Length: 229
Image (cartoon, rainbow, N blue to C red; front, side, top):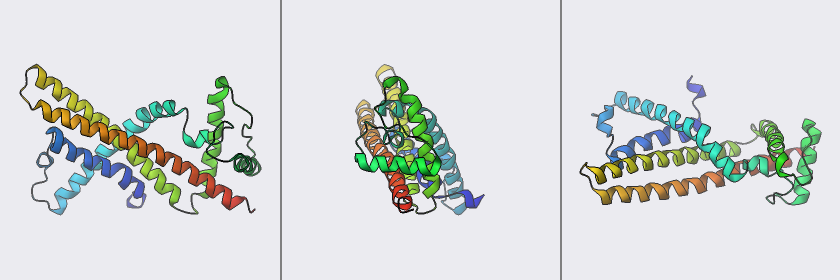
């Protein structure tokens, strides 16, 4: 079981979970580390805190992967890995893209659409491109850890975006309570909302960049490794 806990779990799951616990206590005052039994800071209590952060990180990953990613992918018009093979996409030069399609066709016996894709056919073409990308990734994932690092960072920023969204929702609720009847520092809640909004915006930008970096690294590695063969 220990061998299956890898860098992705630590970067994209444990770190957001631990940060979420800290943010709840530091900004929203909803939960403190003392509430999580961290009294003496010994190994046993620290281990419990890590486990709690891991479980909370898994929940955040579930929200970010099954809800947030669908929304963002719709906004992007498809994942970068799927869009990069479209004829109308300008990420790669045309000659590079054509050679890449030929390599995919020769190695996996898959045909990649080379003409302009009408809107009604876009979803089907993106699914085909996604299948080709997954095969490319499986072909090169053992060669270097660079794509895996980009993917882990993508998962981290996706999870952070979901976390800042939840923190913003909590602050909105607390701000509403302060306006209605519960005494509270309204200015503090507004400041926290601004901080979470900025954090969410930066997380979104880094998430988008890491998604592009991950896709490009896989295609570049696949191209450079198999073009000579």
